[in-house]
Image 1 (spheres, one colour):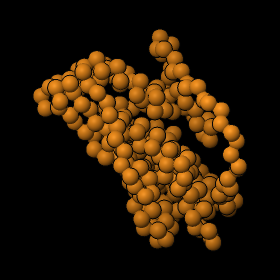
Image 2 (cartoon, rainbow, N blue to C red):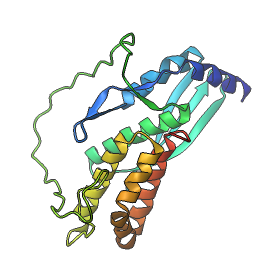
Image 3 (spheres, helix red, strand yellow):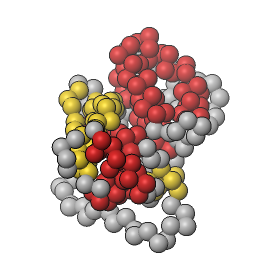
Length: 232
């Protein structure tokens, strides 16, 4: 493993920041999307004869991604497998989970974190891919969160009742989507913990009603927390 270890050390010195060039419409804040994360490391890896590969594994409720670095010598190192639950059991839900998983697996394996795109005018702009128009699809019903909110309406509070009521699946979908959206804009390990503590009553409800979904929620929080270095 000597060749790839030496090459990775050299490549890491050349890594750029994962710039927050995309905007989250729900929170009106910026984040580093998958293309920004790849752009931050791909040239440095290739310049040091390292190929980047991200493999996926099947999972009934989400996706698993492993980031692997392959050196021209044949040596390779894997960053391990990362699981991301799908907020919906459809193509859109699994596609979103795959994007999240690839992004956070790559950042964790490369040891980089997202940064604000300030005073970086010298960097080439990220060009958005052209979107090919597709025929409109019939609108799908979207679960609507209850108007009632348990506890105080405060920062990081998920807008959903702690009581799932009669339709647990719709309620759980809203909780998962709202949680992932909040975690996506968290900028530190402390904010990830704040999201958990603020909504602990809701997550405890999930633990009682669907232990497997609760385990996946714990794994999601662990993944997002691991994307930040100690002290961040």
